[in-house]
Amino acid sequence: MNVLEAFTFALKALRDRKVRSALTIIGIMIGPAAIVGITSLTGGYGAQISSQLLKLGTNTILVTPSGSYTLTQKDVQIISSMPDVAGAYPFYDVPAYINTPAGRETVSVVAIDLQGLVKTLPGLQLQSGSLPPPTEAAEAVLGYYVANPQNSQMPKYTVGDVVHLNVITPQGTVSKSFLVSGVFQEVGPTFIANLDQSIFVPLAAGRALTGNSYYTGIMVYVSSSSAINATETRIKDVYGDNVQALSTQMGISVANSIIGFLNMLLVSAAGVSLLVAFVGVTTTMYTSVVERTREIGVLKALGFSNGEVVYMFLAESMVMGLLGGLAGLALGVGVAYALTDLVPTMGRGFGGPGGSSGFSLGHVSPAFSPTTMALTLVLSVVIGLVAGLIPAYRAAKMDPVVALRYE
Image (cartoon, rainbow, N blue to C red; front, side):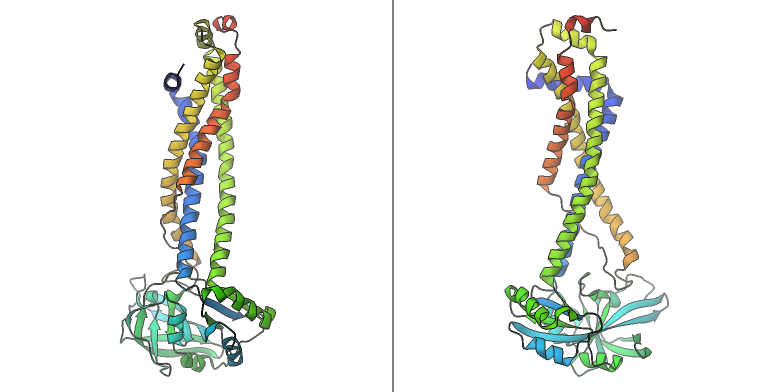
């Protein structure tokens, strides 16, 4: 019996038992579908997070205070004097909101040296207008979603408009108006803040709003990406636990670690369904052997060897594994695209464009790995093969005389 004959027998056997075969194949396809759907989804979001973080540049370190420690101009001078530091830009981050016909639109007012900000974050580019001078405390540059809110009932802003804010300061809520001098392009979510939902003003405006001499944080621009780790170490050596220093490279590393762990956890859970598929194939093959006892007896009486009988039943279980794996890959692709539409909808509850300043899970394209898909298909076939071993061995060991008498 050659390979083609074995698979012809297998397909005929599956057609003779359509319902049972279909149910077994469905049981097999769930595992591959879950694995492909999960890995492609997490891969897509991993690539998106890395891409968004890289927009902040590879030479950026964000320094923020811990506990009761406060950052002052003295700290700016200390960090500026460190080797490889090309710029240290203190900033204020103040919560605020805009009253609109659709309700309050929450924003953040970021006061910083705007020339230094654009230098430090290369992904932050002007879409229109210009940056206000450092001494101009009444002009602002709007983040993309402040100027272009997703809610159609909220007002849009262009260069030359005036935006009226209610700024929440330690002294209470203060009304403040700014002339829009520019609008930034869309950046997307970052570990620093939701820049698209922020309003950027010169540093002097932040000091006037808050009345504080201490800063929310310091943006550190390092002369070379290769000096990032050394600069982080120097900052930690000087300040210890009084500050947190987070670089883009560290953010990417942490994000990849979290996504990798989540991916492993979810794939492990999906792998349980493969064990269920194994049991299903074994059960189906045992039933098939019992139902075809007389057929086995006839085949052996006609001269089929034990090896050929084993080969025939293994081909049947392998075909179920192959069909289940292929169907699972197709279903997994569909699941991945469905989830990329579903997850952003769920993520809006945690903040996003046009809403609060939280980190939004945006829409991404699934990242399909040919290697993962190929391994998943091979695993499905192997499960079918292994699950059919014992039933096939039992069929081969049948006494043809006893098999022919079976009712």
